[in-house]
Image (tube, rainbow, N blue to C red; front, side, top):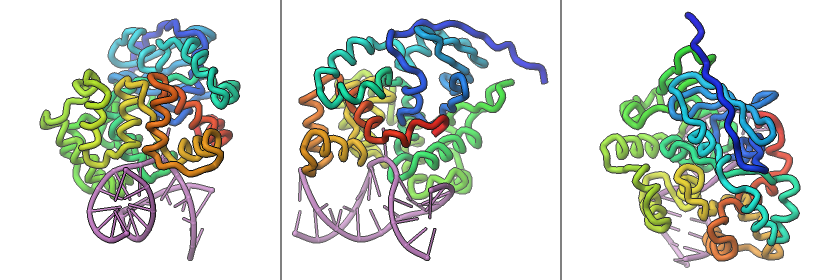
Length: 290
DNA sequence: ATCCAGGACAAGT
DNA sequence: ACTTGTCATGGA
């Protein structure tokens, strides 16, 4: 086994971007933080990346990759400075930003993003990570000469996977959802790339018709995989945070909170959600690898 | 052992 | 539309 030639590059990024905060903000499940950076897989390549001020130092193995593609994937191509200046008009977000500034919205591969968040339903983060990693390891393709990296399995591979394999990925009752989604994509009945080009409301309605996809999961896919930054996923943490910090502790339905956020934050609602989520989770998310 | 986890879904108000 | 009970599984 001879080591593969690893290509490397420097990627300039938006001012204020914070790689580590972005990767442990809960929007992805397969990146691993290392003492001086992070490792992940995207578009068939195993990538090792660390941040050096206003640039990323990147090494990858597998298919060559345009620096701009990595920057877009990591959300490092967005005008974070302007976005956070706008969000800072809000008193709650302004106080949170001291600890959360630099969190960007990633643009992950839509298929992995969809499956990951279907798995996330009524689940805990360590087990979500376990399941997604298990799917890659059992059904994905090994990236040549990378230390230990697999692509996320294609819809075709997932559609053909047996019950025993999926059971080994501890998907639980979500396994039928994942298989149904895989068949839809493999059969050409669902084109996620096309969904990304639709108007927001149409894209959201389409996702809501998919098995295992409710409002929260749909909003996560829209936000983290399809580039719709106005999406505002309301999970239990965001719901509690909004009720406590904006509604004086009075309870609101998730739908009411989503409508409120759309009205208050508009096209930046997704960014607001990330800061509220990070603020609500607090110290729970500050550990390396957690 | 018992409870919880970035909800979805179906059934009952 | 909002509320309730159920769902598989590993970890705390």
